[in-house]
Length: 544
Image (cartoon, rainbow, N blue to C red; front, side, top):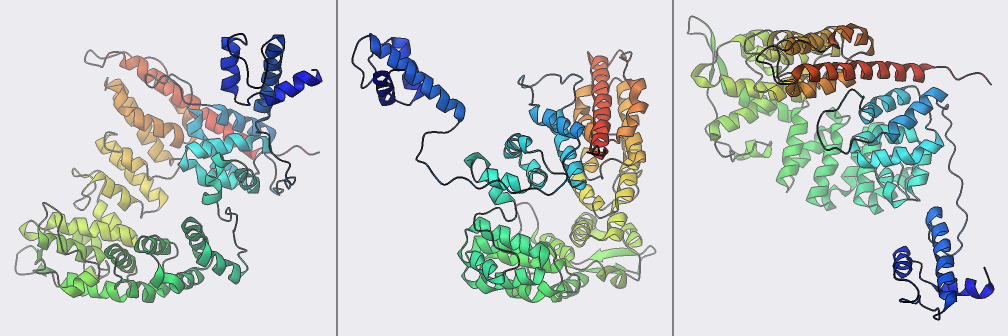
């Protein structure tokens, strides 16, 4: 390039669109700025386009020289085995199909396997390959459910990259210590400085991280500025006390019951009611017990209910909302709140020394059973009481599955969460064996992964029964998707017999047999792929 041409090219616009427009129109019709008409105009335009192409490929706009970046921090964790690193690259390269609908075919959905892969890699303490970090951050940017596991796996280098690319700034907000002014966790003064001077998101992150390490220190920090915080901020900060909630938090929460914000008062009351030994829980126990008793005058003992006739100021201070929602009676609304907040240990002594199972089995007079049992369900969930949850769920084979207290599938799922993983899986397996899969989707979502063998067998058997009956196949796509992610990979060999296209009954949905065969092929392929993934992560790194 001549000196004259280079000078002219440097004066041309940097915008690619402008260069393209000038080229399309031709330099005879549109002379580039700073270039005289003539043969040199075309040459200068091409030189400018070449320079712009280099700049675009470099990915940076021209800028003044700046201090050289410090190198990314080292990640001391062991490197992935080579096969696992290749697997990660293939998972990150997968993108959902662009068809927008239709049948999925037999290929596994790799992006749906990425969360499990990350969980297994984190459990083994591996470091992310540096070359995979941009794709990993892009995936986490698009899926918030991936962020905790992805950022843990990405390690300190992800934060280094996030400070250079605005698209990845979410990592600075989501990862503990990601902010530019992250305090030294060993320096109380540094922590207090950020608490008093930081942005709201930084303060929430700080309080959450500190609460997980030192619950008392986090509470003391919050008390320092509580009186001057905005109501919406107080609510968010108070919510962070759920982690590590204990008796030492009671005094602070009692003071929050007089807060000027109704939402703050309600949250404080909820947290106190989750502490069965708190003074608020004792007050609620007295109120609730006054409304519920056993009528021994009948041949068969029964529970009688006398709902509150008013909601006084003391009840409101303790978190009872006076105004009932539309369509709810005031007295039943107040009763439900009292029973929900009372310790479940109140009831055996109040109701004749009966066990939770015996109490739930008692008839309830005057149509109060639904309201009373629903409140006990909410209390069992809040207090994480396994014995009451078990009683309210009842036997999974009962005609009214879930027992009299389970008012909805969502409530049953929350009750199941209070049970141990094995008992939870056994209950859901019994439910499926009796009632099928049509109502089991929410219940399956609370079971530990991989599913225990009895649960896995119950799901596969129910799918097989639905297939043989010619059921409408697309109604089971959600359960099939769960099975792909949650069945134990060792179950794959049991499914080979289901891969053939079945004979379709006369009343079957058109094409159902082909769909079922396709879905089972995808399920088997996915299970074997998951098994291979786990084996790759367990492989030993070859000795140097």
